[in-house]
Length: 168
Length: 168
Image (cartoon, rainbow over all chains, first blue to last red; front, side, top):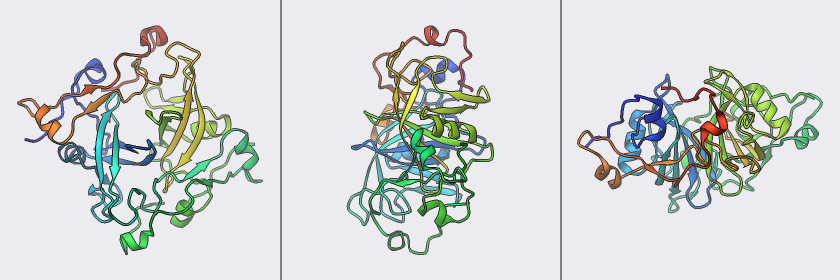
């Protein structure tokens, strides 16, 4: 059976009912927020198209749409760092989903989710408030602080010559 | 002093350096993921424009860009449910930020962040795997499950006649 999404008919239906009626943006994508099921740490922020959301629901494994490669992306297909979805949630207006996952631990970099080699993609903090103004240089630029001591894996070992997905 | 963002010059600079060089999308926005500092719960997923990110950094209070109202939005300006930023992080390619916040507790609905009245905007779960197929009706539609027992506040009391931001 193929999972079907409900048509969006009213604000009340979208916010208050049991219908799954996701809203994909002009590019056919919906943002997906991925946190570690045990620690609650934010691991990554990605996007799904209709097919990625459907496959995530059907398989219980995180699928995204890779904007840089423009294709369906089963997380871990190259690295082995598969994300098992323990809980999947949708927000009030159904234009975002939240995946609470367990990351595979039986491969190199086990438990990590970031292509740079860190556990989380969010490995740098931005100072705020007084810390920001005191951290600014003469041009008003502030410096990020690294929050993870070291990388969980060497991305060259895991991804080889695969192109870096980061775009300027 | 006005906070300045660094120009994006190389993948290495963006991923590995201390420069804050955020990437705003074609609409001038960057997604912001907001979690509760204490519980780790995902509270909401919003967007910031350049000014909202700058003000968040300068004030230590969450500012977003409201896409429905098309204006800068200091969270809590109507409801009093202000979000104090305890930690602000940026991801590898700097096209998303993560705010770990404490929500004001001294107002109606204290600790809540969702305009529908729930604590989190993510108050419904999507079944996955075997649970999804067994939960599907004859049309292949699956039913969401509510995860919060009851609303934290009555949105009519807090927001009055303000237009609902949810768009079909």
